[in-house]
Image 1 (tube, rainbow, N blue to C red):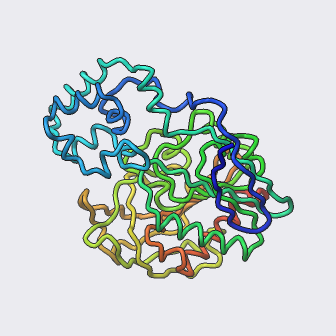
Image 2 (cartoon, rainbow, N blue to C red):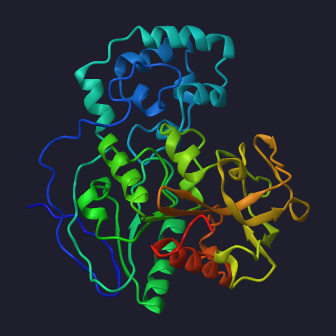
Length: 367
């Protein structure tokens, strides 16, 4: 039996071998959807007929897409770009998009297309023997979009140290098959470690939602809300509560003043403000509009909020917040592109407090 290695992070959890998938993944999102300019770029690149439409409509344009954006093998930016967005990036005229869209929609979605679309999802269910009597955490790291290895590794290492310090039981996996009702009942919270790309089947999506409704916790960091395009509206609008607009550039990493809402239970151990360097995100929607309680905001006068999209100012600029879903407690922090941020004392204290809050089922999220 083929085995896949899981990271054994800390304290008290025994990891057993993966069980092999008994069938191909067939319930992936967008499996049966027609091709269009709203399709993930990767799905068009995987189809010879659909790719030919792009190449015929814009000769030479597809070949000019940089390899890291045009690779059809995950992780790849092609999984987090629509055809429409890729067209804007490569200079395809906007007036050609309706023609491209019509020609794409006219194509049949073949069984081969469906199989190719589902290949980046999995049904591999890992076995975890989790101890009782301590918070149990699942670090989820399946990435089909942009994988920033240094930040993923640094976050995992920081979480390992936190677990040892607090006596938490913690394990990690890159398998979407871990997100199922039976497995999730073994955990108090899930930590989305810089997850990028659409990674869950329809069944797995429902399992995550049910886990939160029953009172599970959810903690997500940085890249987990940093994709330019999302193909699961509930995740970004309902769970995270804000859509990524862009991040600063020139320079990409800047010092900024982080301001703390000391009235929030997650912020009790933090100072009223601190300065740190990172790649600062801006959002096109404000999480407050989705009912979020903001923990941290950025002082936009302390850095230059400009990026490839131009002015990224938000005015009121949340970068960490909590929200509720059913009985569940959710937390997101936009901090975390630079590996060094996972050893910055205040950021570490923030994450530690957020995990403790999210994993404690006795906490009333609405208070």
